[in-house]
Length: 623
Image: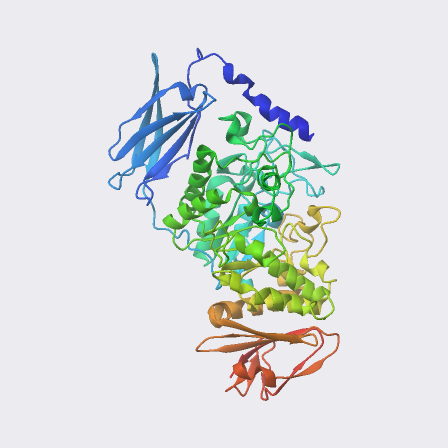
């Protein structure tokens, strides 16, 4: 399969020798529109259609100049460099394309920028909720499937097919999220994935996850399309929630329209025979590494059905960067999560990040670089290490802390293991320019579910959620964790991406409602809600300093503090209760005589010793 797919892509160039006698036609212009008043006056239009690259282009519009037309190997493409002056007014300009006796006119709209919220960013004051739209809630059954799409299936009884969740369904759950204490919603990608079913491990699987784009400027119809996404963002903003968009630059879907008719051979990373990435991150930062290993990591394909985009091609780079800016301006999203960040060309990533930050100074960008040590993780964000390449990414997904928190709950306490893993990860924060911009998590759509990893131990569950919502960084929680959804990825990812009960017509249980949850599920929901709302309402929990003390005998204590408030978080990971002598925490406890446990409202009048039941974390607001 791998060899045949790759050969097919190369064969797509066989039509390039088609006769120029055919009349030209413009079928697409990307971006689909733009705005006046952007900080960057430059815009590059991709113009596509039969022989579109053989036309001589011109335009006449006040404040807009066509400064250069680029042609490429494929005569069906032209790339037009425009400069939009600050004096340009909103309106519709006309692109004129001439070829012999043929003249084509293509309208292109320049819109006025609106004042609606956009690019607001997420900070450590936020609590992000990660959901897969297809598996969260179905609010419009009419868009579950379309016969004219490459994958016309929708069947909830098949774990690998689409299930019908959409943006309308998610919009109906905004109040649920707000009540939980969530302040931002992050969806796995909503952009069109008009991909065929693929055979993975002997099972035919759909692209419900969203990571194989086939048209950058179209939100998938099965989620409701562009207007549904705009509507969702507006409703979320009205409720005080921010929206994070999931971006993919490294690759696209094999059914992408520009893969079916590529502009040039170097639009993708091409190899003599199919070459997969090694998934090894070490060659990128290794000062002793081989260039051949580095090339395989970066330019090898993620999987055969996700063609690897060549970001050193300037037209590819401009296309991706402009789409990022267009998405924020058009939909009003607030932050940008980037898939497979470390597989991208890093100078390109800096350029793309800067384009977003120039237009939206408050926007937050956090990429996925799945590594297991702080040095490699720091490489992909602003850092204090003398790397030959310096990243400008403000944040990142904190995979190191993710692994350490789970290990701390799975392992027995020892010199390096157990809760020492969590402590040691935070102890290396000096490598980052600002570790509070890292996004922390206990699980996500690509991992085993948190509850299963810790052996379905409810007491450990509460410890981990306490850490997540009280330590540094921007906490993110995977959908269903608040109602104790569980499972391992074995035998497939579908096991950790099950439908949210109650989100779909005909569900026997509705766990969006108190009455639909078991007592234990309600206890979990209320536990998350209590911590999340406390974090939201108390700046010390997101802007306060962090001071941690060496773990001893399975206990771990840290403080969040500022000039107005101090909070002590004390954890007992042992299987038996203890009374914790607090004398060694004097530099932070000095001056305080009592405390309130914010989890159960209990008042503690003597802080010299703190009682900690087995497998418990307490959050004490000091008085």
